[in-house]
Image (cartoon, rainbow, N blue to C red):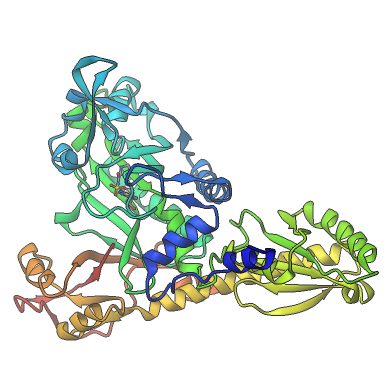
Length: 513
Ligand code: P5A
């Protein structure tokens, strides 16, 4: 095979994202060196160098947010193994997870007296320790988080990042408070924090309070973030926030002495995001040519491709050297001076989602300019390279512009996928056709819900809308927390489509991954 054939083979087309999202995702993760899921164990994969950097950039945004709340969250690390009796303590929690737990039964050749669970989530590993540490009201609030791997024996089809058996990037926060009001405030802080996190990734989502029947095992209530995925526009739950009330406190005997010197059970919250939080920006920004990464999380922000002409090599190389030196102080830059055709280089870096490509040829040097190509729009234009300050400033503001435009595009698409209707048949059709999610008037009973869920394959109740976020409006008109809650609805009488009861709330329904 000649060099040209190799290059052509590498330039193979990806599956169409809007037709076959899962194939697109599989292929794009593999080809761009983000993740390799060919490991010989279903639901487990390998983060490769490029993917690991992307993961690290996204984690560092979240770490920063958690570390900088008014009362900071502190990073901890708890054991992976949970002794069976400890795991089995909270009845609701156990019921919720019993089908999903991996058990360690042997240590070497010896059968263990006490089986050990691989944490599917860490409440039961963490809370016995909280019981030892918390004594008085001065120990509260206690705000912790850890970023670890967890294991879930997923029965449904596993999918790279979306449904894995080893969750490698489980970011779980656990907080403890003296009063129910403090807990409510913590829930608000968590929802705001996760909104900020997802906003920083330029993605859009809906937030719903889950129905009672879909609450996290052991929680009083759960709030979930869902993003609308490409192709058939099913939702992906990308994060959850749970109010645990005193349920776990009672099971694990976590108490403190209040101001009146009485022993009292604590109140708790927990919230978490998995690698789905990395899959979502990949899925929402990507296109048929590969990844499209927002500049603030891209492992490589700029690729420079020297355009070499005979007898002008030195001129171009000198200029490239000069520009790279300037840019490296502010950005992550790669120079692609491999001896292959520029077209192959363009293809390669576009597929990897590098936000901008800078081309420098003899003409650019003469005119004291650089040629820039945007990954997200494909636009090509020149900018002055006359002064160092100018180059850096221009690219900084270009990155800002790219981010805002990418975020807005996702927001507009998300918004166009939400149908608000009083006509249930219209909602069924919308979901059936894979057009998106719907909001319908609904009474809230599980009985009526099952009636509706039967009508469309995979239909689920996401719950009641908590807040529509940021980029759904223009970024500059971003809603603040507290201004939350539904778009203003026309004031009309609305009724549950099943029992015909008069209701005052819309509920979100969707098909989901
Ligand atoms: C919150 C953190 C919890 O486990 N305990 C600590 C709480 N919540 S949860 O909703 O069950 O999980 C948190 C998020 O993890 C994602 N998730 C998964 N991602 C990939 N593969 C899986 N098998 C998987 N299971 C759950 C969801 O996005 C969920 O919101």
